[in-house]
Image 1 (cartoon, one colour):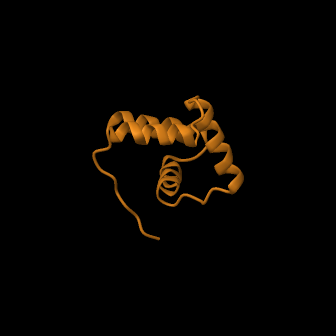
Image 2: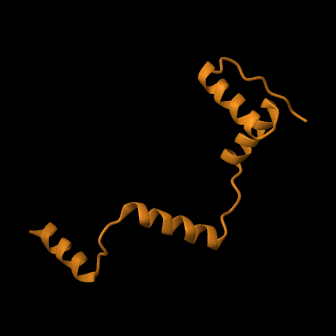
Length: 80
C-alpha cells in the first residue's frame, strides 16, 4: 500500500485533525484517510438525501415563490 508524508501542516489544522480523530475514536492517520476519502471519493447521495438537502436549503432561503408572471415581468424590466 502506498505511503505519503505530509510536511508543514499548520498547527491549527493538525489540532483540528487530532481533535476529530479523538472524537471518532480513530488514529490521526485513520482520520486523515477518512477525510481524504470523504473529500475525494464522495458516495452518491440517494434521492431521499438529495430531497432532504433541497428542503433544508429551501427552509434557509425563505424566499417568496416565483411564478411564471414574475419571471416574465423581470424579463420585460430587463429589456426596458
